[in-house]
Image (cartoon, rainbow, N blue to C red; front, top):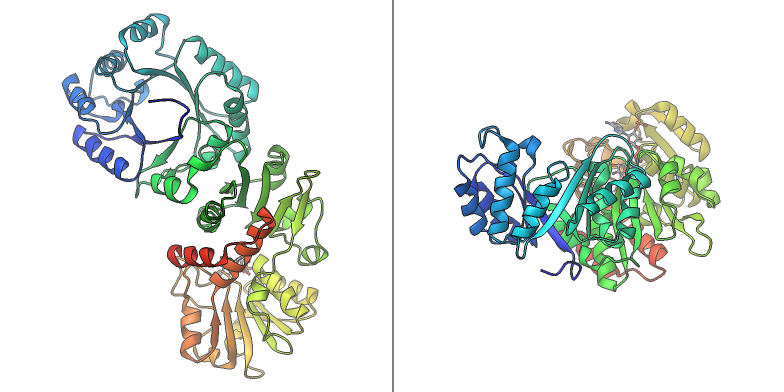
Length: 497
Ligand SMILES: NC(=O)c1ccc[n+]([C@@H]2O[C@H](COP(=O)([O-])OP(=O)(O)OC[C@H]3O[C@@H](n4cnc5c(N)ncnc54)[C@H](OP(=O)(O)O)[C@@H]3O)[C@@H](O)[C@H]2O)c1
């Protein structure tokens, strides 16, 4: 198997028995894995012959590893002895890759394994945890791994912040020997998604139904991100949020990039400190961002240029890095306001929620000539927003009784009704009789209880999915400079949401 010819996607298999290992290997193959890492230390076995059977019956190219510290006490007495026994046997059976930890890889052991092998490639690995590794520390570690004469070196680091992954990209890009690099934990996910941009040989994925923090499923690597297409010229886009795993943006933007042949990747960015994120990932290749909870307000201060309306709203949704000077520029995408724009003028616009989405809707409605009335759980927040848009704030308990006229417009921009609380609704069905149009910013689920009941009483309903799609279409244009493939993106949304 050639090394850099094609990006390899690997599934790590940790199973108690040979039978489970075989079943998982079949599943990995079905889900598109190119190879598997067989963690033999996770198996309980009484005799090496059980491992031999597994290795002989493997249906995918394999990495055989054995971590001494995690070895099952039931499998052997001396874990170092067992480790070497397993690795030697794997080499005799011509398994594609054998991984040995740096601590075990003495000169004597390595030269024995090297002499024994015919086709097996030897990976020497090291795990670094705790603290932020500097480029220098990682560089020294890699030099040390390289000195062993390994065919491939591997480093795994445990990161605390997303910014800790940057030194890993640096060493990946500059390493002179084949390097496997991975940051573990949910903030390490971009080490896998962007690894191929910096020359990674392989990325890890998890088996379906087996969610592991910091790993994508094999299916999503193969079918959504299509990381095979990511190379050094790929532009990086992403959604900066915390939490971020619920974001559907990657499901839509990546297929749209592939569909149009644009060389970009759109990734979830689990960011704790947005200012620090921009300081560390400052190169032009980090080209555009959607901004989510809770960074929308702080993002205003991070941008070099902000549209006056975003300043008024106090929140930023989309940031593009200007290629000519690298400046971060806030860009406007007409989103929710546009979805419900036409009938707003001269109407009473009842808004539930005064967070980021609520603020954008309130300003949009005001600019289109509506009278804005705001209800929010936190009344002080409702009052502050009402003041900013020359509207009115009322206590949320009055919402169901609020009926100054018929034919009003209702917009829910609170999280009420969002998964998992799908049985909740911000306004009772009876009270919905006063509304002509009901919009729900919540888009998971697509058809909220609020929208179902509004349709039942005869109101026109607009789903948050429409807002989401319009925002994605606008962002695609801002990110790529080209028109978004609208029909294609709408089809993806119908399939995925
Ligand atoms: N369709 C789209 O494209 C799109 C885009 C952005 C947002 N959204 C959706 O819009 C909703 C709000 O997002 P955001 O960005 O504005 O979030 P945010 O800034 O965190 O604001 C959350 C809002 O929901 C209210 N809220 C939360 N839990 C509540 C509860 N249990 N009862 C009553 N009110 C509650 C909050 O009230 P307090 O002020 O009292 O905390 C606040 O007004 C979310 O469901 C989000 O998914 C949709």
